Image (cartoon, rainbow, N blue to C red):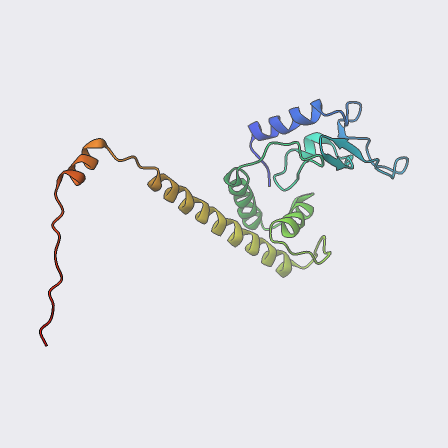
Length: 183
């Protein structure tokens, strides 16, 4: 759920250089409240978006969030999946949720697991345990696949030395003729 410090700092730097950044409140555009309920669309490059009004420090610290203008640098999957998996295991070990964690878990549920049924919270302990287990299993499986893919990439990038190539090509190949069966 949380990202590492270098990715966080890179995200905040991009936000502070953005023309939509609200320096007074430190938010992505004007903060959304009763005075300003409507977000005005902006265009940066080819992307038209509505600033979310969230505090940038809060928004940039979570792996599941994305810049409304799509300006943040891409996160490597293992850079956010491993800390998220560890955080889920910590929640399971602790046995309770802290403030704000349920919203983040349900955002992961929507965006990572793809479950879009309109639910944003649950007060049912077995349902929350089921969600934590689903997220843990899915993240662990994805990390395992990523490790296997990385190992395969490393194996395919092995360079052959010239000696091995000359040894293989120097030995003559004997040709065999197929024998015909007599009838």
